[in-house]
Amino acid sequence: MGDSANDLINRPIMASMHTAAFQHNLNRVRELAPESKIWSVIKARAYGHCFEAALKGLASTDGFALLDIQDASWLREQDWEGRILLLEG
Image (tube, rainbow, N blue to C red; front, side, top):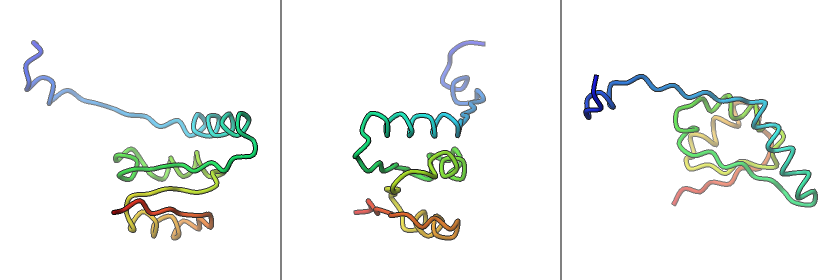
């Protein structure tokens, strides 16, 4: 097989989300900036990589910044009670 455009388009691509890594990184930011509020930005439902996993890993964030009202509604349906910043223009 070569590296033709068709080969690149048809190759399987897999993305994994490690919720423990999200939590670790969020905790590390809190250590470095203990007086700061930490907001997590999720664009395009985590680019299709499982918004649910992102929510699980970032559950202790101070707020979520999102692009669509549908994502904000979904967060509320999941009982998220924190702040939401809607970035939609």
